[in-house]
Amino acid sequence: MFSSLDPSPFGSRDLNEDAEEFIVDWAKELPLGAPIAILIHLPPSEAIRSREIGLGASVLHYFQNRAEKYDRDLKEHFFNGWRYLAIGLPLLAVCLIASQFAAAVEPDALSRVIRESLIIVGWVANWKPIETFLYGWWPIVRTRNLYRRLSNARVEIVSR
Image (tube, rainbow, N blue to C red; front, side):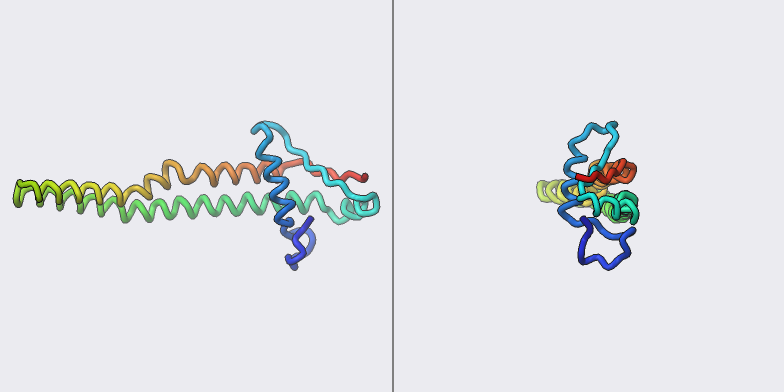
């Protein structure tokens, strides 16, 4: 169930990628308010040993760490958004001012093309911050919330 390549002690090891993917995909299908229970089926001797060493707590700890990772990713996402905005807004201002100068210099067709091009460049420079603040953070929050739900799941080790 845990990654064989992870040298950490049992309580803080990473789940096997296939096990994580199975649990996460299964949990995505549940209604948002539904409680989550993770059942781990093991032979009787392994089940007793797994309960003793805290397998259930280790699984929950793993999902808590993943939720915290997505918290950090969300903070980084918004930090980058502010960086994009710090670049995009001044560039938009420069482009708008330059388009006004282009209009004042020579009011002909070429001047209009230059003005419109500068305005387009200014707004395109703000595409990334707009996307970041309006849409980009939703998938991160959704995934983080799923991992939070999984970190609060009930884990049962069942003997078969």
